Image (cartoon, rainbow over all chains, first blue to last red; front, side, top):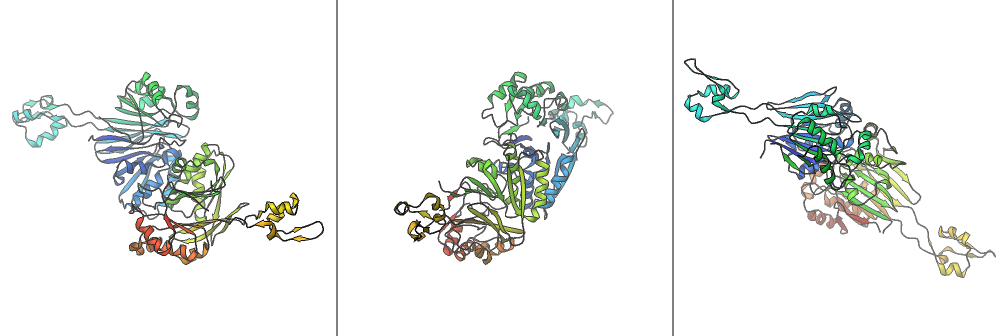
Length: 304
Length: 304
């Protein structure tokens, strides 16, 4: 099982569709669950996908439209019924804190765990700093204040070469420093360069969520070099004007952002109800960025 | 197709279950849809059941627990996206008006239809008066203020006997009065009694929704003589103490209420997640009231 997995609970847009739930995802990072958006029905899909509710530590809300947050009160109520204990941090645009707090104050009066609301404003910035991962919020360009979220593993440790540890008889006490890049200084003062003693660290992986937004190059800048990019692709190119007017992107525009960002892989989602098949959307995005797939509800993607 | 149909969208209790949605029902009365409770996911189930959203005129909320109302913001947003126009009346305990109004004010700012909140308080009373039906709210006995709703057809018109209309040569202008019970007065002043001219009216049917509530005889009084009674039966008898402590009923208690009320038929629902099969619950209720069935999500029952 991969350390870093994306679970897609819902990849539909605001108008309900029998095929797709509204927006919701769960990033599973070494067993810690971090949710992104929480449309109505997200908890039911989580349950169907076997994602354990009590492992949720953070919920990142992109913007305060109902199709991205109407599942939140129900999910928090269920956590309460499960006697979760501890704390859940809800990261959301600052304009949404008051209403969400009113809702949880009203409906979760006898709460078994703490709900902390952490507002995002301006240009976003670092919203979570874990020992081996950070999450940053960055602006999206929609009809209301909206933020994307970038999950990025911190640089990993170098791998020690067992043969060299033995050859130079490196004391255990020094090995941690060497993993972090230090040279080995022998008792006689001789220096063994780190490069002789180690193999490169595993790459640090990253995932970015961009929904809802119009096509904007600043989004590509914000997610430069990302491994996996989820970008909304509400419409095909024939609806480009409508996309712009509604604060959304076409599939081709999602492809352009992935190309500009130098992403490794693109997943498109937030599909308009009109698309029963997403083939056309994938085709249009692939012209701009070939390594693209369409999201679907219940899909799990390892970030590797 | 019957004039008066109950559609069960969700018959689960607060702890989510993979088998059942939280509480929600739709009464279809001659094409007008009236919703009772609106748990999360109600709109998705409505769609699956082919119930047209734009026909919803009223939504009756029993009480302000999340499993009975968290689907409301999403449903109202969808009605808005569909450019419904007109008005939806949300009938709810008065303590819920402020929070629900805050939510719709925040999320439905550019609304295409009017949302009217109609508070229920004290002992309830008449909450809707249609030309051929009334809806009354009556108190339930739960942990927070809660109301049941009684849908009752008004007395119907008598049926004219075609043979008698012809025999007495009754003018068309007088026939409506005769349907309403008048005798026929001939030009010469002779009176033909109504009973010679008509056959009895069809019975006026009724449906009552009772969830959530402890076992209380006052509920039976409130729904005296009802044709179809939906009563919660969260637990079997072995959990009678827990039922009382949590403000709920056992299946046997639901059966007792149906018997005391002289109901014609009982549907039990609001089942605890622990019951994958409802056989035990039906069995226990049937000892008190034999004409009982278990609700299930997606079930449609004609009230006849």
